[in-house]
Each structure stands twice: as C-alpha cells, then as structure tokens.
Image 1 (cartoon, rainbow, N blue to C red):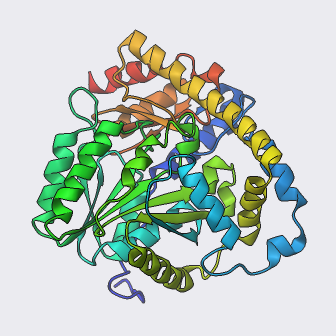
Image 2: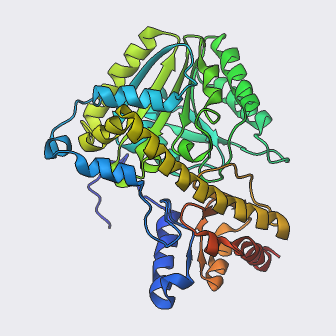
Length: 414
C-alpha cells in the first residue's frame, strides 16, 4: 500500500504541463541534429533572430546600475510606493478612467491572478474564462478552492463569441451571488486575439445588468502581453469604459514585468484595481496586503526599483520604449508572416492581432505536434489545438511553418 503523508485535499495534486514536455523533446532534437536545424516554437520568452534570449538594452543598463541595497533590502509588503504609482500609470497610459485606484505588488502576473482568485471568487464557486486559455488559470482556481468554467472564445466567423459568453455568464449567476471573470486581452495567450471595444460593451452591459440585480461582479483583465499588442494608447482605449461603473462592479488588471520588461525571472508584477467606490479600493488594498503576507510576504525590491527608475526619467523612458517597440515589430512581423502563409495554403489559424503566441485548432493536438517533429518543428499541444510561439521563432525559420502544420494535420486527421 502506498503511504501518503499529505493532507487529503492535497494528496492528488499533480502538475501537468505540456510546455515542459514539448521543450524537452526539442532539446533532445537540437542535441542530435543541431540547434540550427530545429524550429523551437515552444518557448514563452522572446528570442532574437540569432536564437539568443532578447533583453531590452535600457532595462539591462538600469538594472546593472542599481546599488546592492536596491537589490537586497526588504521591500514593503504592498510594494514600493513609487513602483505602485508607476504601475497604475503604466496600466492605463493616457486612457485612465474616472474612479479610484489601487495597486498591490505581486510575484509576477501569476501572483496577481492568484490574489484576484483568492480574494474575489467564493470558495466552491465558478470562475469564468475562455476555452482557449493559459492553463495556470485552472491550477490557481483549484489551489484557491474554486472551479474554472469556460465559454467559447470564438464564434463561427472567428469573432468574440458574445452569445456564448453571455450564456455562460448568466448561467453561472443563476447559481451564484458573485462572479469573477478572467479576460486575457489584448494579445491573448495562446491565440494573439484581442477584444474590440464593441466586445467590451457586451461584457460591461452584462455586468451592469446583473449588478443592478445585486450581484457582485469582478472582472480581471490579464494584460501580460499588452506591450506587444500595438500603440500603447490605442490598445488601452477600452479602459476608459471602466469609469463610473456601479459600486458592485470591480475591474482589476494583472500587470507583469516579465514580457514588457523582459524580466521573466525577476517575478515582479502587480494587481491593479479601479472602482467608483473608495471603500472598495481601501478593502482591495487591505485584503491583498494580507494575502501577500501569507504567501510571499514581499517581492523583488530590485525589479520594482528598476521599473520606477525607468519611469521617472523621461529620456531613459523614451529610449526604453523605442527599444521595446523594435522588439514588438520583430515579433509582429513573424506572426504576420505565419498568418499570410496560413491564408495562402488554407490553414485554419485563429485570428492573430499581436503578442507572443498564435494558435491553430486541431482535433488531435498531440498527434499533430508529434508529426511536426518529422520536420524538426516543435510546438505546444493544447486541449483545442497547437500553440506556435512567434516570440521565439526567427522570421527565417517561420517561413514554411504554416504549410508544414497543414501537412501534419492532413496526415493525422485526414
């Protein structure tokens, strides 16, 4: 008999991650055939066209200029005040809605999502997100005692499926007094899709309808990839809609330094909130400070200082944004190349607007990915399809990938 010392609620925990398996197969092929022969479309970090980890030069320069005290001293549990102010400004740019604002430093964007689920989803309740989603959402919900429910992200025309979103939203609120909805936009992971302003009108009309009935509605907007979605104010125009909402609608944002600052391993992010109620924001700060103390206590002081220093110096910020925009253009050109070739060969790729990833629906994603190994192409099998990382595949290697995906699909699915 197998002996388990774990508590009964924890004994069945097993972390299954398709990305790690795909990456391991890719490393094995690279060792056998040479990295130049292999197309690694599994990675969630930005690689330059020479296959090296890309880092924003100004970020690196400022980070190296910090003192040992900046790196090693404890930070306040809520985060450095100058960091929190900067994060609120960065979240909204020039599209700040009317309302009251709060922010709490978190361990990456993952930590922001964790705090939102831990504090705004009732234990045992359902949390709503799309059927194409980052798998960690499910892990966080399970860990926090809630359940993830999905709506279909796309309709038959590959637009936002407003009807299915509404059906699932309303169905849950027939059973629950509150609802947390996670919406990953713009530059959605794993598809690169973005909601339109009209899509947001649909979401907010539903929220206001049920808020008027006394339901508590929380919306978490995961903006991890927003800096690779387009011009900063254009991609944030929808945020103006979050002003002057009813007191019982809270909008939060999961902010991350991982992608926007190429600071993946520094694990620094924030949960940002906007509300028409000062009381709601005061509560937001208190309960999330408590949860931070109970998880990581406080986070990376050096990375928070880095962001604040860049934001406080206009010339440094201008240079930083120029360098980051060049990386955005690099990734966008790779994604656009894939989409152009997909249209040319008839591959049914999902609509890509920007960001690190794009996706192709598949009946048997694992089998299609395995077949792609014949061409030394390594992608990530998801539940509904395969994910291609535009962030890590050079333009040269991206050429022809769409046609090879179609060939693999036809071989597997007929």
